[in-house]
Image (cartoon, rainbow over all chains, first blue to last red; front, side, top):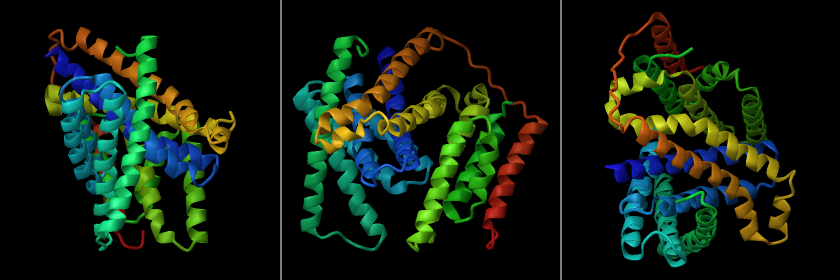
Length: 173
Length: 201
């Protein structure tokens, strides 16, 4: 009972933080009129980085699924329905990956985050294109997927280095 | 001033719906007066809205301004909900299972201010120069670390507080009393929705 409570509280906090940071980053970069490349670059990496650290902070069976579920609910509450389904699916896929690899450690973090990034990113690009009545052909879709996997792997590496720093400094148990 | 959730949440939902289905500026404008207490955030947001309107009209894509309005409305509504909704009354509707949602409402303003300030000050502090030099890893770490430290600290403290207080068998009293001020708030939401649906607004 205690473990489940910790799981859902952590999942809620990390999902909300990841969601909010998107809005915060857009606010911060737009207000200072920083480079136009900064906003999409940060928006693709930092929310995923927060979720990646979240997987490692929770470190329990069902953590990735909980984060995917709560993110899906948050997107649904703000009428972003095409992101709802992708977040839910990405959470399930990451849970499968974490079942095989665990949650902490370099290999686990890189692969888990790559899986989540792939599920969230590639699927939402595909569904978003469908909304504009455009079915993405196979080759660009594979290209997109590879980009998201690479991005997810990079973010997973960052997540692992940050969370190992936090564990060593005692911030994260 | 705290408003009962039984009327406040439907009112907020109506404003959110108005923003989601119409391109009217009424929902966004209706949420701004409540943010007077948060002057710095409000100024930042108004600046962003003005910049967006200017940029979109220059690029001849003003129809996309509806998305800026929507984002601003949703962000404001979350802040409003955190500031004005009487939290125990949410539990009156949902029971104990609604606690993660209340948790989310509580920390939205904190995370928003941390992340917008970190990215805002990144340029002054020369962190974006690391990007030009090609030091990608340290760039992302410098930006993400303050945000993440805050997130992890919040999560750990909240878990401890939860274990000590609610988990220890606290009884949740269901508070369903509605006052005149609450009814006014509910009517405000309905008015905003109605106004937005009028074509020329």
